[in-house]
Length: 312
Image (cartoon, rainbow, N blue to C red; front, side):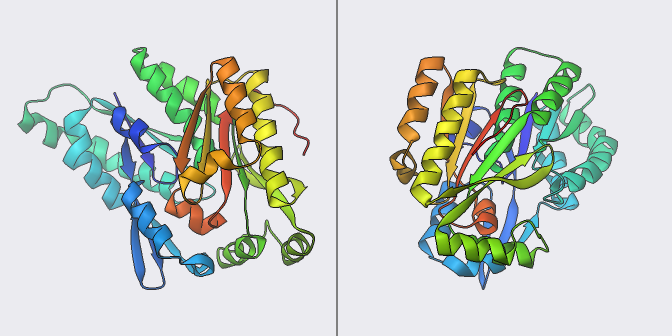
């Protein structure tokens, strides 16, 4: 059993390596600089060191193509695994889900031509799942998939459980720069952050809290000031930890030097709540794809929980 994710899913590199999780890359071009977003820490550091700043909103992103997905599977994964679950960012935000679905037809049609000469018998299964969220919001599904594999669950049981977790996964984002977010949204034809909101936010230092949930990305609250926003977000996350999670993990990410994340206001409250409740707190650098879409300096959290009311 194996797993594949797209690069926008924010999980620590050591977790991906430990569990042999394949990453389907996203190509990112800013001005004349091109990046292969595959969660490689060195590439993320190169992106940050170039200080592209506000120019990144004009970036072009190209998700792993149908041909690239086929190549990844037929050249590598069908020789290493008997079943692979592909977990992707919500289909409404990227073409990667549709590309993987299209690629799966060719993979399932041609895998025998690859496996049999290598002396590998038996069928190969490929399952594709839309996580219904984005960035850290996609992470709980991946963590749960690892647990299910370790528990020797069947592919059918895994699919059912992961579909339930995806339906109840939350990804929250606190952007630092609303003008950047509006410029990026305008380029992509996304009307979720209007000009008035951007001007108001910058004038009064009001920041929106955005949520990816069940395939939709919407503002769910406003906070005054960046530091207060961090404190409100982490306090909410700590409350959800104490209320109980469907997967015992809270995933956090930062669009910059990761050493800055634990220093943010309220983060210590989240650390304490996770320690008290036996919940694993993960820290990951935000993907290059995430940073060009939300802006550098953004903070995100992701977890899976029963449906609940949100009040910021």
